Length: 293
Image (cartoon, rainbow, N blue to C red; front, side, top):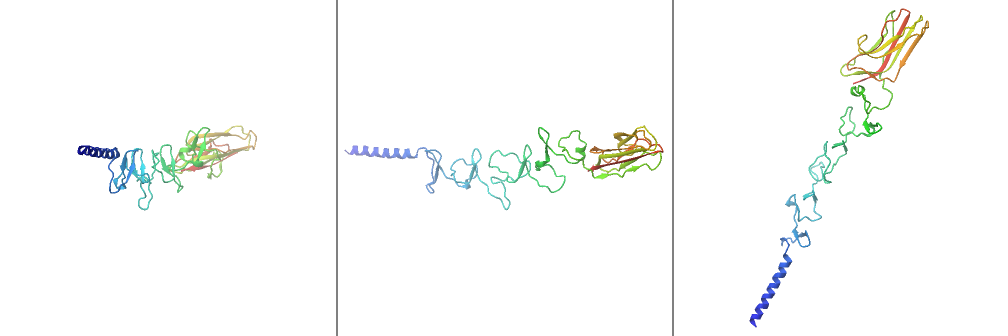
């Protein structure tokens, strides 16, 4: 009888041990002091960790904790630093050439515009000749029938370009004109010049006026030249012909507007008759335009 009691007692002890073992199989150690754990699976539990544990954590993270997933592990979310707001998830400070973020945790916190490759801080108009970085295209783009191009402003480069990309259709700008020059002496050709502006300044002619008059019948055509340079020496860039139509006392005046003829930098522009008239004739020339810096 006593042996039977021992056997029964041993069986009870084994059953208790098996039950306890079944309850603990698959579980990690849980702090008896705090007693906090989160379920990884239905049978596996992990100790809850606090922020002092550091970055790069992959387990023990409660859903309400200020951690963000970086695609592999969880990192602590960042706040503000001092009096200046910075990126909410790190120490990235907004700057030009900001690359496209690869995760939504990297936030561009200022107004930015995309240049086709990276992001730049949007700029406001503070002065002339601003760099193009961060400047929105806005209304400064023109449609060429297929794509949009930046609209060109007045400059040496744009006025001497061989293509018209970004050029708007508008009335040519005119900021100066020359006083008409009339021959004051017999057998003297009429000529007028716009003096060199120096440096990189170019003169751009937008209109010309020339007149020829002879008191006797004259059928000889009179040549007028626009020169890129001084009288009698500059390169001829455009020419016109005039006559009095073979009528005694007849006169002819011709005006050309809507031009946009650019000269060379630091060079005068001259409009003049190619040859002196007879003593019975007179000539006048004048022109107008603007200058680029």
